[in-house]
Image (cartoon, rainbow, N blue to C red; front, side):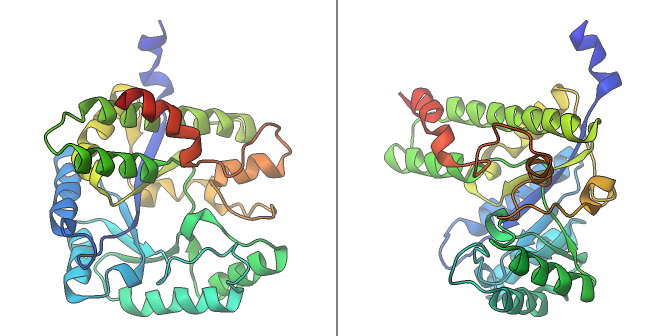
Length: 289
């Protein structure tokens, strides 16, 4: 009965990708970029990329970003230097200057859209800092682009790359399956939290990164979501959900928009940070034993 009920209660999710790739430091950047775009094209999915400008400011790096826009995906802003706004050494003025530097570099890209994804999902460790950046965004027609579903895909990618380096010919399919299961688990968690806070399932935005494990098995991830009854929508459609119009008053500010609203509501037992590799280490260790 549960399986038959899935289509009627189908959730929706858009895919977002952070960081971009740096050919200077990642020899396989072009191949990973092409594979990510191939997976999205084959699945007929439109996504949004938030590149950190400094990671792709070379002609080669900018061409990788441009390929996303040329393929019909949106391109936003992830700052230039990927600084953590919650760090003591990073002031609101310095952070805003970093956003503006990336804006100047990326604004001419096809399918550019003035939306900001905060690095590490950190939006300020004081109300003054948080509000200074929000005021700048409002004055420059920038929209915030938080995810609703956070993941630790970066940690799975670290373990994936380490396993490949340790044993280039070893089968990594078990780790890939565990990774897809992790994404689905996080989606279920944040959807449940959203239902508790909002009383409904919103159009979600999933946080991913442009990395090796997604280049390897993004197709399996998309298939996994669809098999569980999720409808994959465009980021434009997802961000029209009223969820993303809300500005939680939490300090420190940030994390998933769903997490932040739950924190503002006083919902108990929310871990901080919401996602981290430390939470996943034991499960990945067990897979790689």
